[in-house]
Length: 461
Image 1 (cartoon, one colour):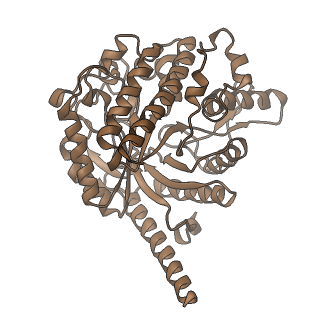
Image 2 (image 1 turned 45 degrees about the vertical axis):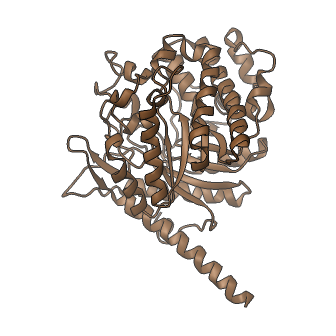
Image 3 (image 1 turned 60 degrees about the vertical axis):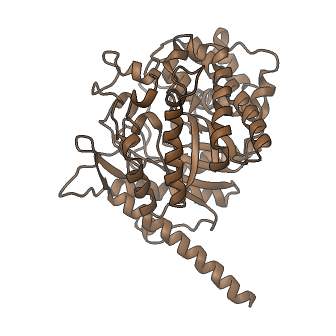
């Protein structure tokens, strides 16, 4: 690990370095300036839904402190920021009138980013469906996909010329399986069949939104990159037994291929469809043609691998590098394995690692946080990412999760992913050691590539 810190891998000069956040996790201002409630506002008020009984009403108060937060990004020398828009902030009920005060907030955020030379990478949907649409059936209804396409078109009309990229969805696997499969996330439904149908409607909404956004871009002459963000993992059998190998194949088919095959091949994977049986989704004629739109980029969020053991109790994975505060195995080489496999299976557009990071205890001591574990986590995953690039995968950028400690969904504020510490009582921001390391790493990358460019120019002359 020391070698990774002192002699890091070299990335291309045009590689994008950034940080990421999401609206509900940081914005707060839950009902300010006409914002409507989302399913997460509702879910947080269900007894026992959130581990520490907290909510997103204030969170990091980013709605009022975004200038300070953009300054933090600029101070790290980063030139890209991935964030999401709260749909119910700009359209309170998910259909009907637009909320100009909500759009004005995002316009001011874009102004702040542009003033500091930071690219804006927008995600339209990071799990916070307007409650008004949930009251009409939410993602179980096909009509929600149509409302989403209208929302995507309106955002593109207003901001398409100011955005470097637009992602339709963040991690639809989570929206479907954690929101509808096991009730871990909003809206808190536990129904396996519903989860699978929801996954189809999420994919359908992506395709409809892509078509709508491309039409707007053609009309206005703007050209943000359009794509989707998926959470993915490699699935490794615990042993070479037939049972473990079969379990790993099914896990990969039900998670990664379930979304990738419709997007890139126009069908669901046969292995997963067979396993879902009577819960297989209802698919209308023409749905796959809508879903299978060309992508300008694919966002990949990677945190851990799936370890597949058919034994009872399951065999644990070997403790290679430990676990994060979320209990997730630290397995950087899984990022290489995943990307190489995707590269073999699909005709990939440029890939961005849109999330990668870890939760750790992050104790504030004497005004500082020495989160060496996070530095090692990021460094090891960047080395794994470079190995995938060297193996032929076209990776165009990396967004570290996350800029700020924030509301970590059903874990509340108990888990800290940020490279900037947030004292929630005072809202004071304190960059951690990882923020300084990331700043220096990116500066070193730029210096190295600039030196290389200068050297090449010397040779040419």
